Length: 613
Image 1 (cartoon, rainbow, N blue to C red):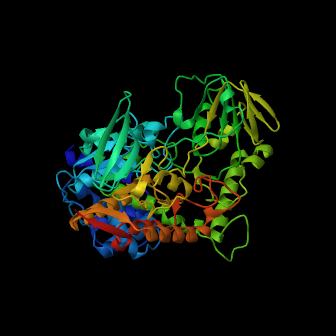
Image 2 (cartoon, helix red, strand yellow; image 1 turned 90 degrees about the vertical axis):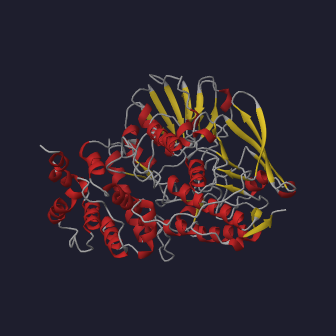
Image 3 (cartoon, rainbow, N blue to C red; image 1 turned 90 degrees about the horizontal axis):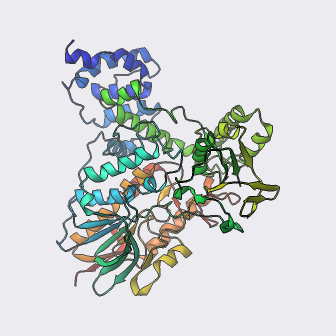
């Protein structure tokens, strides 16, 4: 059998395993014919056309061409199964990797122009890579941990994995390193980010075990004075013309203010600081919290623990996903590896499903008067989720009452069920909704009794509204920027702070979306924008760029106004979108496309530029 025959052997079986919509988009793109697929419902015809179109591309005899607008539009509509507004075409070209994407202009900086990037998580890595690709190569990356990876280095708790499809939760330039699962676990995500650092040539500019403790702006020299502490106990001082802080939005663990918390005699730790020396086999474990981390931890530890007591303040909405927890192997892996453009078009479809396809579910209908939901679409989703919960735990009326949320879906972060309900049904797992009032050396006391436990896990989230702490930043005129940001979190586009020349924070206040997108996508948008600010500053002959206070206030007020009528602004429900505040400070308003467009160009009227002295 020839190599060509081996290449296309089993094509019919492969096509039967393909997603119908993704395959239709691929065939349309590769054929160059917007009318290649006339009926998305006719699967046999789609497979027959694919069998004719694909072999030359699979054999390397033909290469995919960048589609024109008409062809791109037809493929987008097929991939999603609905008409997509034409405004999404450029977004699709970039975020799927289909192209073409105009290259960004180079950044030309003096040899002694130094940039410091703080943090080597997804955002810091993307910022550094973007600067490097645009020609600004004189930078260092200061990473407080022993490795790049950010949240995926720090969070190592049992069951830790991404809750966005891996093929979507990846940079547009490196979509699939061979993900082991559709929703990959923490080790694979950490390996991915480390690989991007290595492949991008950033390793020799990365300083691990280097925690920046303070930044102080020197107005005379127009530089930042940087103080850092190192893992070996030493400290260092340096300067930088520009600082880009990427400490991570969910990086400072939040411990509950419970009387007697420090008195517990056994092991007690936060989910982000998991103590792997503690063997949970046969142990009585209390898990405080039922958010995203707890939802992954409890199903992972329940099979080995003697008893797990889960302490819940409020239930979460969970939705099922047919591929969650499934290996990406066999025919599914072959689809991505063997069919050209299948990965890219599947990514576009997923970006819609986990993106602006959810817009009707989070948009408040002012005419809707049912407190269960915010709109007809949101109400339909609620019905579906309630039916799912009843299917999962309907045999336990006592449990059903505890796990059924009273607020509309998406008010809190929407989670994917990875076995949470089945874990709660186990004989050795108990869900306690009574308020925790005290911790003692032996366990946890609630309003309805006392649980003697051996280990306590705090799955209580992060200080999402502390964007710079514990790093001390002092800006123009000695302004305590850290304290000001803690007091009233505001930043222009979530990135630029007043009184902070040549300083950007990614992400800062209102710089993420609450319902759509993902961390890699946000990082790419922010990195492009920040690098463009630096290019404009340098090209103008300036030594400083600083956002105008009125631009910061305007963005904050406009964002808050738009969010006031959002699903997340429920005054009766706490969430990390608000942190410890009454209003939303972490997420931005608008669609994925709005977000993407916001960071494409720099409005120079929002900034002041100071010429070089």
